[in-house]
Length: 273
Image (cartoon, rainbow, N blue to C red; front, side, top):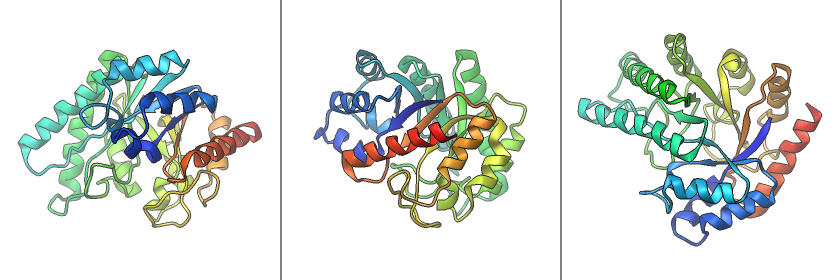
């Protein structure tokens, strides 16, 4: 398994220019990571760089782009908004290709009170099917994440509950869609990590390692200091022969020390697995 990182804790600093992308990449290289993720807050118009610039900065430091952790939202009640969202999601595939990333994340969308479960599932399935087909033609793997809330969203994810997430996956069983499994998000939803892992493990194509202090709270802590069974997830990934990326989602807002501790803990778990 290869180690990467998505610097959620540094998103604001990078966007307001108090930290440059070059500084982030230097820090990541100093942690001896094999790769870094990309995400919308790091790219224009939200962030400072074009995909080509981001890729160049990484390659100059010997870092791969492990994944484009993009946002998508397919649950708008208005059809014109859904058409626009589909076009943006397909564009995210092109961005992943420009970054040199092997995969791109899709999300179901926001949990809107006026959208029923059945209607939302239908819209999400239709859109993701089209995105996955476009990505397959481009040689990019598309993965749906068991997600909570994007930094640009007002509401939690439509598929945050595992029952909805699994329904979408089952409906798309014959598509090239994979799973971007987040270890902490089931616990944010008040559920357990390992039961969901077992149900989706054959389709896991990318992994986010994160941690929380208490179940049911949307607040992350340094990986290895909370209650998420990350070491057991890594052990089970090893047992099933997973050799892909582990992306440390550092969102504890504890500065550089949080990154260092998280990387140290994940490396220890890899050695013990």
